[in-house]
Image 1 (spheres, rainbow, N blue to C red):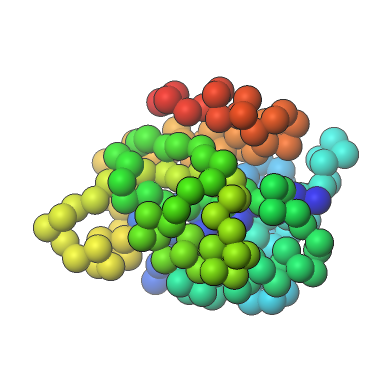
Image 2 (image 1 turned 60 degrees about the horizontal axis):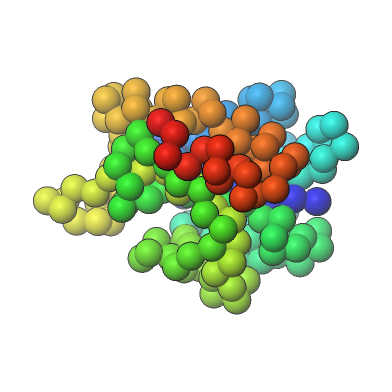
Length: 187
């Protein structure tokens, strides 16, 4: 069983904010598989998917970003998911809008959701897709990540969001090294 997590903050007021790109990607993936987040457990909305023999869970943590690791930890423990079978989709201030990177592991880079995951799972060695939201140094970081995307930013992000189901298919079917080689550096 694999666990695919989109990071974001719960609540309508956070829809289309930069910090919620993970939720936006999970919505696209769920739409592709024609499923909906109809179950909840451990403060998270989730759906189990069985596609061509691959079982996986799509999860949106229902706690705020800085506590999302608690939700993920509970799913990992309950469903007996190995760390190497986790994929986190999140925003990245250090990457330009319209860019993304797949990584095996790494530091949180100051991202509170990733910090929480590291604390709860006691490792930095989980796979991730980091989607660029840029960084406006003229705006306080908290206000910036909780700010809504502009229409221009959404246009740049749309192709990445649309690509998510294919990335997930590859994540399920081929070694992650090959997934990284296929997608890193591609616009």
